Length: 306
Image (cartoon, rainbow, N blue to C red; front, top):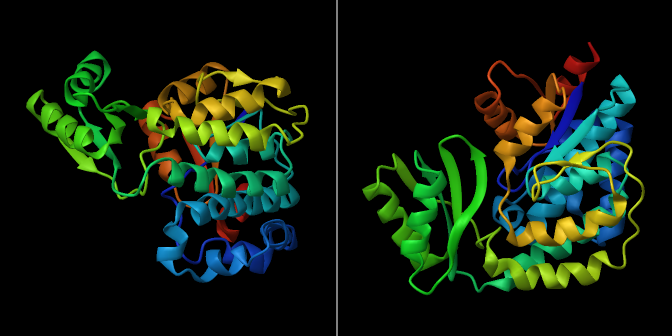
């Protein structure tokens, strides 16, 4: 069984998606639909940058979603492949829900544009931070976060794979957590170049605003289950999609558990669809001997067609 997995923020780069749009009418149509849905030329931003504009969260989220769905449509049209389940890392969960038929692409691209704005506006720039902690996890990292908080917020935000956990919260608390983690034996603590502290309690106001947007969106029955970030378990219930997406904004991304769950479900190949190879590399560390494939350009599509 194939699992289709979709990347989140950090995978963007100027030029992404252009090769797909130039070679597949189905992919080109996705960019046109995104431009119409958003009312500006997102395709030009993906194809040409500039990188600074592409890094803005309100642009990054719809841009990655659009490239991912363009790649998906090309793959579906050329290879006729269908997954047994889908999943995505943070923002990528929206791509997975489009793949599963739960959200229309036009709705999804409008939602994530607003999601990006809500997440950025929840915390003033410079107030929050995120950091990757290498070589410390579980109760030891929880204790580091408790000690570092000192009345502020810091907590695990992404459980990416064994030995790699991302923390998020107030900038001062994150700095203190890095130093404490190193003192307790962490191999590295590295601040990440992000504009807001995603997937922690500071994002709760963004979730409240997102709820109102999602309340006005039609969620269709899922054709395949989506393994959610919040529960690391497959969801096929359309009535739960909205609540899970709202919770996801301020809850940690349980990616390692999600991949392990997909392996238990019988997934034999993980196809990363969208820009970059971040998820495929994580999956290889989580499931030893896992077969992975990447679809972000014509070469990736052609390889799977063969």
